Image 1 (cartoon, helix red, strand yellow):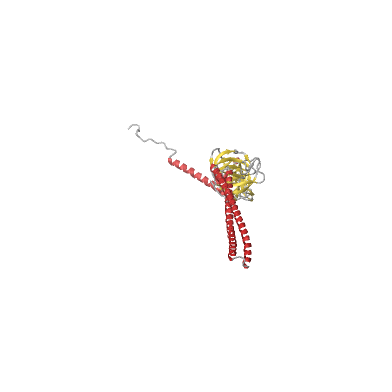
Image 2 (cartoon, helix red, strand yellow; image 1 turned 90 degrees about the vertical axis):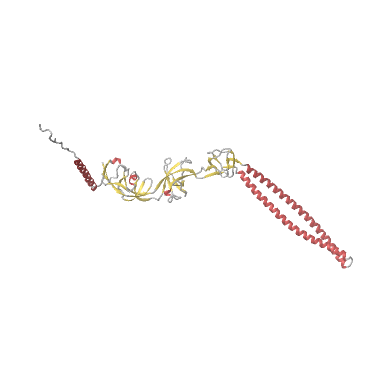
Length: 423
């Protein structure tokens, strides 16, 4: 068989078997779990933090006033728009945009041939109507003169025939004249009396008709005068004039352009006073009222007070507009279009527990905060409830007391541990 060849070879025993590896991993996990449980029982998860890298603030009991930050633009307090009353072609421009103007100063002139023709036609009709009235009056005077002359002749005849009638009546009673001669005189006398009466009646009626006719013609002339005046005013409206003293801040006009009635050429801003117009988030629309106070950020190292004068009810793109006036002094040199940043007061001052604003809010949403121990060695996580805010502080409703110290800087790197240990 020869020297033991063909016998089994002894294998080397392995130190790290799969079973041992699994047992080791399980042991480490068990130890970690125990350590975590012990840490939880003794204060939760901890994180060592360099004290100099966090901001520590004090909880205070102090006056609190809710404010919001708003940005507005300076506008003239009074702006008058330049709208075309009449349409036409731009013939002349007398003033350029940006120049100062005085009230009634011509700005530009339009031409309108149709309006000019209407003016000439109205003037011609007016003259013709006046001529007709004068002609009618002359005819009435002539007729009145002829009628008075006829009445004068009739009265003369009646007077003469009355004398003959009285004389013949006496002669008739003495039978000195014939009955036929007396009756002829009587008939002629009575004829003229009746004729005079009829003429007087016709004269009164004609006079009444003539008075009515003249009155109507005069009324027509008055209406034509009013119409002519209106047309003249329309003609004057072709020259656009400054409505007030101020600055021509906008002018949209080029020579030769045709513009229709109602076109807005621009505006004149009065320079004696300014206002601030600002857009506010619609969330506050029910809480912003005329009379509310606002304080500007420093303008030339000075803060200025303003008062809300007007609140516009329309909401556009999630915002509504308010107009504010400066109280007392206006910032010197302030110009139209300049940006003004200010704090709008949303409540009256009242004492409350307050904490400074800080980066912690982005992580906690105001639901919890790190509160320092009295020793100052660590800070623990505590649930709180915040209320209103202004530009510097939050109002605390629950969870904090005056004098406590809190961490108000950012919590982004803390991973929401339960305790911060300072070193």
